[in-house]
Image (tube, rainbow, N blue to C red; front, side, top):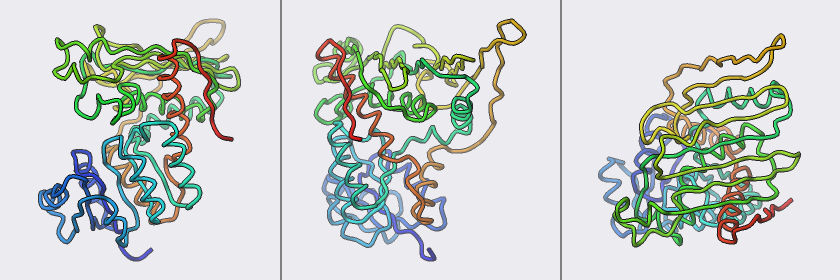
Length: 360
């Protein structure tokens, strides 16, 4: 493709600024349009970001009528479904910020429309672009662990509860499970090849979010600030998934994969009350195995890098559009974790194990 890619941005909040910054580093990309549902906000964004020549629209429909190669969707969760479906049907390639949607049924329709139209739907999970995340995936899928029968993932902030749209059930769909839990799920599920889930048994709570001692919007807090789940998959595999926006503890522990030949332990990088969440980097990785009749622990050397992971995700999307490659992180994969999160919420409400139904 000889011409520059023409990119539109739907939603002009803080995350949109990160997309603009990443696109600006790509010489073959031109940001030509911005839309926001709040009248005048897109125009203010265009001016503030000095997007010379870019058009501003009040709402995404007019933007989608323009000659665009792709769009970044940076709206609140509640708008992900309609904007994505409209963009795909308008012939645009889509980079969608996480989480995928508010409900599983919305996510299912989004993947179906992408398949029907033949247009790209890729999700914004930048931790995948850490070379050490790829190393983790290579180790798990290499067979070095033998048969993986149990995995554990999750993380937590001692204090880290957002507000606004994030705490509304109608607008966000879920709380900590979707907001930061999606990163933990993607790390573990991607490493294991996104196995097919069968059932989930879960518990959630919002003791901190509903307490005015801990949250200034306690009276409006409707989602979970903590959750734990046991997920059963095909091929006799189980996953323990736990996540927290707030807790009286420093960590919910490492991510681990238990196999018949070896185990792999992975800890997040960083220290402090926000460090235990998998939207960052890997701190340490160790292999536990037996050698010469004795228990052995082998540290895995980490790969040093200076990559900006957010920039890498935007670049990969743009290059995939330019080169006609498939979606880097396809919606069909993330549909599986949406089904798990949906199962977590249903199970917690019903106080029992529930089935997860996925289309064939």
